Image (cartoon, rainbow, N blue to C red; front, top):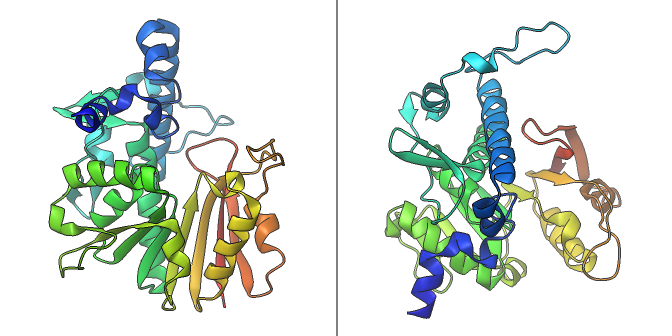
Length: 293
């Protein structure tokens, strides 16, 4: 019963910290100012996603013509959450998240970011003819969910146990249970997403042509473990590593400073930087694409 209550009230708990809104449920509930700030952030991100999808033109401050006040946001969401003429239904976000209700469906910031990233992964899979995705650290599984709506390739998540439990609850409520494979279960032919504890990544002999992905975590992970991940990625040939991370170099939780993905990979000769650019949705985040030869 206790576990069921936590699941039903996930958005109110500290378990959701970092996986949901920018502000806690308590702060959003009690502060009109913070709710308004969160709403502006959501709409700004939605506009950026719509620009990326070419649903609306990219605003150029040097040329003017910003028409945000004239936008119909219900129409914008309907036009944006489309892939190859197919409507993409939103992730079944846990209760007590802050977001936008449109046409009887709910969208939060993580839907926007997850859909954006899944579009990029899907393009990379097709461009480089890769076999499957390995994501290290996955939040609640938004990216995996949206990717599975576009692509039939396997998507493997490696994470810590408590986060895997959250992912399992959310993904199983968003998809057919036969499409979700949990560690220790027999794999069936219908599975699309596998959830595995992070240490299993070092136990498997990986095939080549893998799309490796990390978002919002490598700089915060203890550096020795991060190096082990990089070595594992390095061991797979004709593979691609896609990173969306920050480079703030702030103090971390293990009495040191954060590190950047670029500094981690610079000592490995078989990694080649293909592209480095700012993230389309978030200021201060860098997208980097590496090949592993």
